[in-house]
Structure formats: structure tokens, C-alpha cells
Length: 387
Ligand SMILES: Nc1ncnc2c1ncn2[C@@H]1O[C@H](COP(=O)(O)OP(=O)(O)OP(=O)(O)O)[C@@H](O)[C@H]1O
Ligand SMILES: [Mg+2]
Image (cartoon, rainbow, N blue to C red):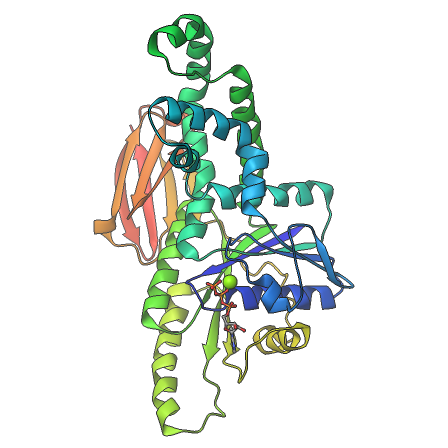
């Protein structure tokens, strides 16, 4: 199953591009599902029909669903949430606050993506198109599996063992409810699911992310940052879509200026996202909703190109090993030295880009290794390890 996630700044046209891509894939005879993980769903408005949390058939090959983020959360996190809530309440938090704190930001959307794993394993569809929330939320959602893994690797087993041993006495003394073993089993089960999903989503052969933007300064800057963060977490962006481009037929001095501004930013975007293909969507003279207009939008953006293709396959993180040296290259376009921090801790390389941190597990052979050199070459951060 081919998986394509669309993200971008608020309002740039993510939902429209997602729906149009899905309409086109279905027209090409591919069994397609389009779903949105953005809690502020607008897929129904875009397709101009009612959609719910259950898959809804829209046309011959097209199914749509608006995932109920809360329901997915309950399904996957319910038991754990109950425990954390109980724990927080025992520490004096009020009911509602405790319940809210028992969910980490990004988690709801992350769980809604677990559906993808089911679809992938059951080969339910040829193509799955995901209309994601705006960039910051999407990056947070996609970095969650790493955060979970970090906790699992370090603390999970130890904590479970300690709790098993000390529960009978500890609960009486500290008066804090300790997690029962089925809470741990739930965490473990969930962790495996999330890991499996991450594996699918970071495999450039079947999954890609696409950034939708408008040719404007702030939007491009945000897309560029998102591009870097996604690369840091190992997700491959395979194309970008510039939307709302003023078409040549607007012959008017007022828009002439705007066209010049857009041309400048489109040229900039080409450099930033090179070598990714950049598709263009013109600004239509009406809201692009309903199957007919989405078809016209897909024509304008993709022409004869099949949008389900994988347009770019290079993984953003590459490694190379020679006899004594191990090299890692991370594609981080637009990242400046001042926003970057890297160090090795035990068997991990820790990379911080602005507010995001990733712990990358190094091969065992590199234990007690050090960073010999780290420098930017072009848009890539090249790190050399040695003893
Ligand atoms: N190229 C275009 N021409 C004309 N109208 C467009 C175009 N692209 C998007 N629109 C319209 O702009 C509105 C916003 O688009 P859309 O909902 O796709 O943006 P979004 O990025 O998903 O927004 P949000 O961040 O709120 O989810 C919709 O009414 C859509 O029909
Ligand atoms: Mg939207």
C-alpha cells in the first residue's frame, strides 16, 4: 500500500490537495482511502459529503474517513490513561485536569495513524492519503514514536520489575497507586504497534510526506523548517506543492505586482527543496470543493502524472562505514549552526535542531566512540565518528 501524508502551514490547501490526490488516484483505478488526522476535520467539506469515523464510500474506488481522534485515544491509551489519571488525582490534581494531563500532545493524532498499520497489513487499499494537521502538530506527531522508544529502552523494563517487587509495601507507605502489570502490558503492546507503524512510515519505498505551501515568505520558511525536522526523524519528503499561484490570465497591474512577488518566492522554494519535484496549483476563481472541482484541481496540479508515484526515494539520513570511520549524513536544509547541537551519549547520537531532539541509536561497534568531525556540506550535516 502506498502512503502519502500531506502537511503544511494552516490554510495553505492541505485538505484540498489531499482530496484532489485521492480523487485522481481513484480515477486511475487505484483503490484509495483518504483520511484526516487533523482534529479540525474539513475533509467532508472538501469532498462535499458527510463523512464519519467509519470508512465511507464516496465513489467507485474512493473511500473517506475522518478519524475520531478521541476514540482512537481511548482505544489505545484508555487503560494507561486511567492509571495516570488515578495517579495524578492521588497527587491532588482535579479530575478533569488529571485526565487532560494523562495525554501527551501529539499522541491523539499518532494513535489515529495506527489505523494505517492495519490497512497496510491487511492490504485493504492500494493508496492511503492522509490529510494531516498543520506542520508543527504533524512534526510532533511523527516524532512521538522516538520519544516512546526512548522511554521504553531506558526505563520500561526496570520500572516494571521494580514496581512488581515493591508494590505490596510501597503502596501502603507512599499512598500512591502504582501501575498494575496490565498497565505495563498495554504500554508494551502499544509500543510494538507504534514501532511497526514508524517502520512503515519511514520506508521511502511505500511512504512519503508532501509539503503544501503558498509562495509567501512566512509559509516557505515554515515549510523549510518542517522539511528539516521531518528529515531529522527519518521521514522522506518526496514532493512539494506550491498552491494558490496567481495565473497568467489575471491581467491587472495590482496582481502583476503580486505575481512578481510569487515568482520570487517560487524561485526561492525551488532552491530550498531541490531536487524534490515541485507541483503547482493555480488560484482558482472559486472554492475547490466537490468531486468535479477536485478533479479539475488535480488536472491543474498533476496533469498526466500519476500522483501516487514515489517521486523521491533518498532517505534523509545515510550512513557509511569504512575500516576505522563511521559517517552519518543528515539532510537538514535551512538549519543554521546556532540552531544545532550534537553529542554522543553512550550508544546514542543526540541531535537537537531548534526545539526538536532525536536520539539516534548508533551501531554497537561504535560504543565509546566520539565525534571526530561534524560539518555542514551543502544542506547536509556530515558527522564522522572515530575513537
Ligand atoms: N488553489 C486554490 N484555488 C481556489 N481555492 C482554493 C485553492 N486551494 C485551496 N482553496 C480553498 O481554500 C480553502 C482552504 O483550503 P484547505 O481547507 O484545503 O486548506 P488547509 O491547508 O487544509 O487548511 P487548514 O489548515 O485549516 O486545515 C478551501 O475553501 C479551499 O477550497
Ligand atoms: Mg485542512
